[in-house]
Image (cartoon, rainbow, N blue to C red; front, side, top):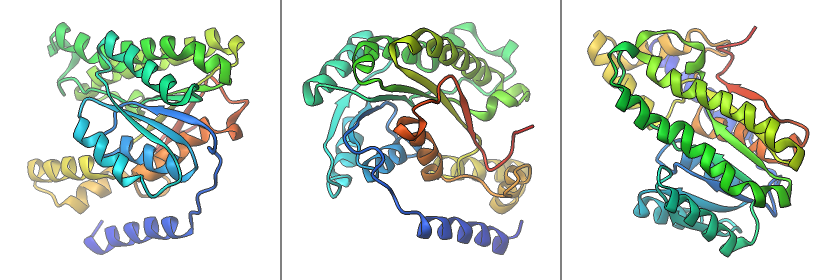
Length: 281
């Protein structure tokens, strides 16, 4: 893919943004989002606000939360920042308490916080490193889901796990990450069965490469290592997709928030891939 070809891909993304019109499908709902960062976490909050949701945004970094709260001030929604370490039980309990204190209800919990283990073959990763990653990627979503379950049962709400298309890959360097995301997939399935009788839906979203700042930097790194251009790395990653491009963080956020809306009221126990057609039968 040449620079001009990449420009065409960007132009296509621009056309999508130009024709996309947010609908108030989340008006009146309270959504809790963990893992607020510069990429997907921020996009989840922005897109949810555009759809009318009130928000509780959680991250370990207060400055990041306050900046996002200020950026969302133009929307007619309430945004409550809560400094949270999702690996700490006291901090998780505080997140629930602050949510109920602010709104008295919760309609959706989006488990977006994640950690990436060393990018090495799994036999070469220390078990302690794998365990640390699973504290964020598996046990934190489990505990948050359990803590919020009573409130979600009252609202007939939902839980969404941010998974990854890494589950469909077998490269040795992805094995540690795949291990935790595979466990998260099984967790979501088990929670869907356990919590379903209480009216709580549990679903997962699995993006492939999201073309945002973090992966742009990663593509620059790969380009330097492989003596390629950024555009050539983009072409390598987009080549297996049907659309011949990569999804933006906004597109992944919108697909995720569909599952939080009443449009998906009968959808549970599912994994939605958002990958421009990279993985399917």
